[in-house]
Amino acid sequence: MSVNIAIDGPAGAGKSTIARKLAAELGFVYVDTGAMYRALAYHFLSCGIAPENGEAVAAACKGADVTIAYADGEQQVFLNGENVSGKIRTEEVGNMTSAVSVYPAVRAKLVEIQREIAAKSDVIMDGRDIGTCVLPGAQVKIYLTAGTATRAKRRYDELTAKGQACDLAKIERDIEDRDYRDMHREVSPLRQADDAVLIDSSQMGIDEVVAAIREVYEGVCGR
Ligand code: DC
Image 1 (cartoon, protein in one colour):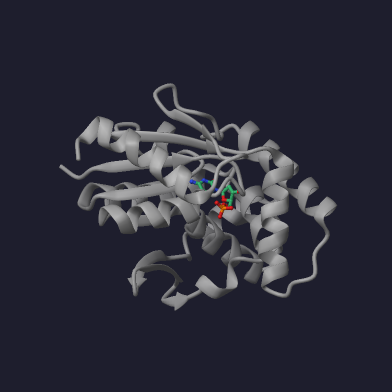
Image 2: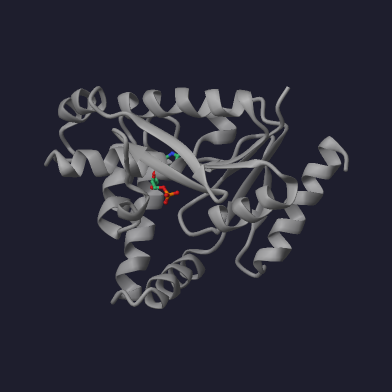
């Protein structure tokens, strides 16, 4: 049976950086489910679909094939055969993603693919509903969070380092809006699973968080 580590939490808590690092240490496959939701949202944006139009979103799901593959250990996400990994990291796609991930048709499509991957391999999967919905039987569940201001500043530094002009106050507002939507949607809202370990990374460095999760893993699965 494969070993599954589920990491959930709000945007900017450091899930992907930490999950990628721990996956490399443990020799697990890292699955970034947000990238899969982003690829679908990118598809809807390309089709000119408004996020409020649930019927059009559900219909467009049928014409979108989302797959993932790995190049040099990095997850790549493909939309209808095209590698869209470089196109899905904008704030526009991020906000669209949060808005359309409320629809059952969107979630059902991706959850099925995610479960298939986790059944075949040892994975560290990050997202919003991994411990609660996608992999309720995961051996290790982590809920990783950090204060809003900390998360906004991290995002600001990330974008600034890439040379993208941005406004810290707007990023913080967007994060608050996204948290609210992700936590209050009807289907699979973001919440800490009852059996998840809570880690607040506000005052922790990356290596400290990786070590903390590794300790939880070793406590459950042995060294
Ligand atoms: O982790 P991220 O910022 O790339 O995710 C973008 C959006 O995708 C997030 O606001 C909510 C949605 N998402 C989701 O609903 N369920 C997941 N398992 C992963 C992401």
